[in-house]
Image (cartoon, rainbow, N blue to C red; front, side, top):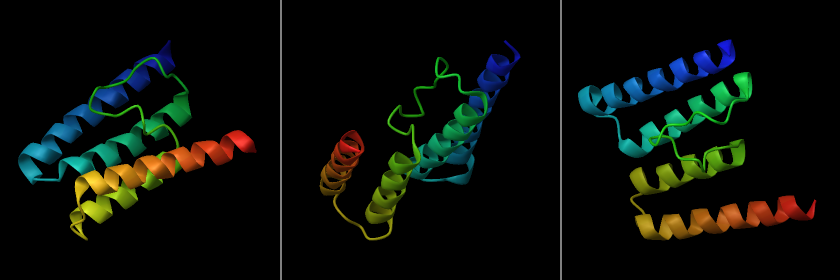
Length: 105
């Protein structure tokens, strides 16, 4: 039960930190999602409880490959000014390829 309280508290901190980062420091929403996803992954890795989640943290960020795809997508959209729809399609294709390779091994 103590691990669950810690995870709930950690996710609450992630939520508050996300709000403060966007509202007061102007951090890009996509970057907030990536950071929140990585922090959520770390909390889950340490405490392994998948019951607690926040709507702010997408369920898609459950493993390091998904985090890597998200970071690359963010960089393509923000720094290289690529179309969001195109990046989304390529990111989905990358996820499908990864899942297919993983299923075959």
